[in-house]
Structure formats: structure tokens, C-alpha cells
Length: 155
Image (cartoon, rainbow, N blue to C red; front, side):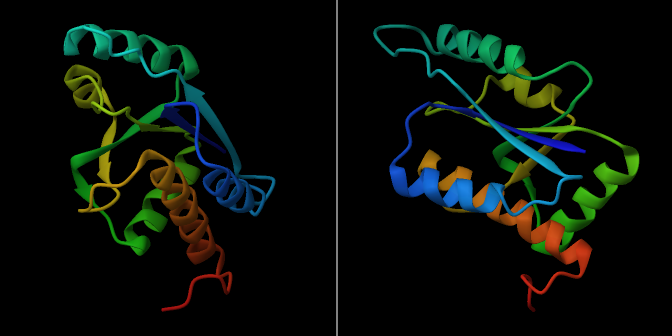
């Protein structure tokens, strides 16, 4: 199975990249994790619709056909770690490769968000995008560890 994290925005602080890389290398070979950063559309006097359309085009180009699309959305389903572990297990059992999409500063185009297979909420807090990458991969690793009976996750 493959997990593809598609994140709008290219530059993240070194600490965030280091933390992301640390978790990414922990996954077992049968669960590949990849990050694709897509360019944020320059904001200079463009309408929100224009920004959304440009970013959606880049996001869709980064996602191979046939992948299950899960967007991170503040209005999405709130999951516990165990619920995320169940989702991950379900995706694995169904043989789905999954693209998890993190929007840019303005979020994701509403039609793209609605067309996604799932919408999940990472937190009630407003988080910097670099932090979202780290929290997402940590929670995916934790979900894997729950399913694998790995000691990383303790209740």
C-alpha cells in the first residue's frame, strides 16, 4: 500500500522537514509513504476562484489515477487515533493507495473538497502547514503501530 501526502506549499522549516523525515523512515516496506509538495499559487491580485483552480490543477496532477483521495478539512470527520488506525487498516484490506491532501493558505477548492472520498479533521486548532505535515505523518505512523501491536502507541 502507498500513502501519498500532497501538501500545497513548498518551503518548510528545517525542524519540520527533519521531523517529517524521521517518521517517514519508520514505516515498514509494505506501507510506502511519499510526500509531494505542490506550489502555492502566487496571491498577487488574483481572485480566490483563480487561486483555487490553479492549486487544484497542481494537486490533481500530483495524484495518480485510481487513488483514494482523503482531504484534511476543518469541517471533516474528527477521528481518534484508534479510529484512524481502523481507517488505515480498512484502506490496506481494500488494497487502496491513498492520497492525503493538505490545502494551502486558503484551503482547498470547495468542489475538490466535496468530491474527495473522505474528509478528515486533524485538529480543532489552526495549525501552521509545516506542523500539519509532521502531525499527519506522526498520526499515520501511530495508526500503523496500533494495528501492528507495536509498542510506539501506549494508551
